[in-house]
Amino acid sequence: MFFWSEHLHPWRSLRSWRPYFLIFVLGFLLYGQTLFFDFTYFDDQELIINKEEILKDVRNIGLIFTNDAFFYADKFYYRPLLNISFMWDAQVGGALAPLFHLDNILFHLLAVGLAFYLLTRLGARREVAFYLSLVFLAHPVLTQAVAWLPGRSDSLLAVFILSSFIAFLNFLRQPRLRSYIFYLLFFLLALLTKETAVVLPVLLLFYVYFIDRGNLERHDKYLLLLGSGAVAFIWFLLRHFALSGQPTDWMAAAWSVINNSPALLVHVGKLLWPFNLSVLPVLADSSLVYGMATVLILATVWFLSKQKRQPYMWFGVMWFFLFLLPSLVRLHDTADFLEHRLYLSFFGFLLVLAEFDFIKNIDFSRRATKIVAGASLSLLFLLTLWHSRSFSDRLTFWRAAATSSPHSALAQRNLGVMYYFMGDVPAAILYYTKALALNPREAMVHNNLGVIYMNQRNWVLAEQEFRAELAINPNYDKALFNIGDLLVNIGRESEAVVWFESALKSNPYYWEAYERLLILNKRLR
Image (tube, rainbow, N blue to C red; front, side, top):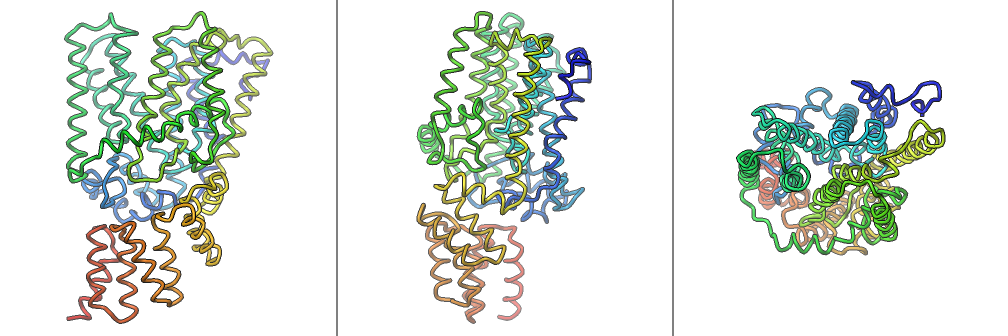
């Protein structure tokens, strides 16, 4: 790493804009290859490719704010700013992947820059803050947030949360209207990016009462509480009306957190041992040993650190777990534990590291320290370069998913889809069969088999598969559409109308279903 040179004292250059420039340069060196990556067909096809008609017209901003992030009938995710960020990319580059990847890199670099600034604001020495920021920049467990396009939900969330926290600190130092407004604004933007942001006021309450309790008057504390509550209420109303008031099963959500709690150890293990990586990790194929070893090591170092600031360390622990816990709520999806969900939590890990004696007092002027620090960063860079290639295209991605998570029915199913796109039907059927063996109720598999049989003009088997899909997934727009298509092919056009209408009811933006209905209505007049 060039900044460890003996001929240039590295830390003298960490003034004013220089650290941010270094972060920018190193970030592009690390992630520049992703500019040549394609779509993975893991959510990005739903968020970008299939929504191109919506994204390329800015007049559709209203639709984005009044719909689920995926525009699904079963509404759950309200993330309008994520969709607007994709709309911005579509205005410039259409559905071309490079521009989307460029913005993913920029959001990551902005988040790293904010993390560096915040670490210094919270008392870390500038050189320590810079080193930890480079760990944030290069840690391979965060690769998915940059190399995978939908992963920007977490890097964009981090930008708004860190900005909100900076404005909050400014308000603590000098209660001014400008700082207060910026805190509330960035908090609202964070909520509109990802619902995980709702835990921020809890963290800030802890900070006020256990770290910086003497700086605010009582009325200023009440102002923060009321403002945070008002912003959360505005977000709640927007989400409620956009998702049509669809109720959330809070009991099921609580049970899902309990059932998925072992994933916390999986996540923790990847902080110090970033080798057991996967583009689609599941518990069945993950080891808890790394997590237990990490907890033991961190607890030991915590105990041995004599100069630590306990409130700051507990604040870091709370930051890590509070921002990670919402990811364990899995009401509508397969229970996967995607690594990008560690992104915002990772800053809490950095806060804890900054309080350990051996990091707080590290002497970067020593040759041995330079070698160890440079080697550790170089290792992280190499691991990230290697891991990011798994996101280069859809076939590479799903091969990596099926290999690293052989017990994931979703991975086997979608690898089958990729082989189908390539024209390798026998391989597609093989992986669809593997998916059903792992999970007989795996969504979309029967529909995909039905498409294969329909292309082979085996109408009976095709209809059986489509109906089997709807028995599992009754609102699946593509299965509804495909039955209509099948009925058209066998001459039962009047029956097909009902199925196309059902597909549109499930997905009002299914343009192909509109076209089919127009054609059929003309024929049946």
